[in-house]
Length: 159
Image (cartoon, rainbow, N blue to C red; front, side):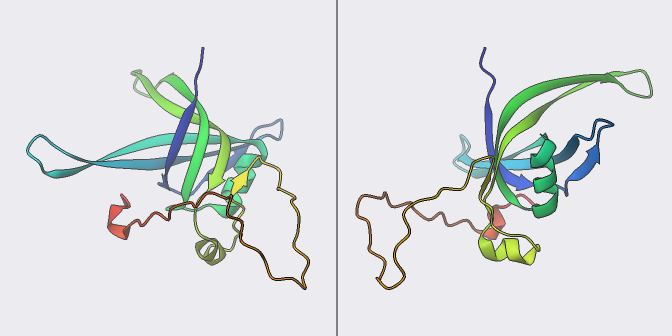
């Protein structure tokens, strides 16, 4: 079976970090994703989805150190179904995402405001490529694809 989830959104709260007796770090938070669409009447509508997410190990520690409420992230992981009985004896359940890969999407300037650096993606080794000699001007590569810039208005963020 295949169980893979990819989400891009903003964290809904600061990460709550705790440690298991074994020393493994666990970080929990939520992510908000949204989509805009037109309903049958032609009106512009927005749908927001809130999902609980969990980080483990070093990823939890990195997330706790560099991310805050409102941070834009891309997470990849697997969907998990949790069941429990609450204090009143009611059976409860929810879906959540266990994060396997984290990519920080905030700009370098916003990361500096939060006291962190722009690490980009965690769990991927840094790329070591050819470095241009310092006495020569950098040359443009015409083979690299142009990545379009996405213009997002602050009013589009769900919080």
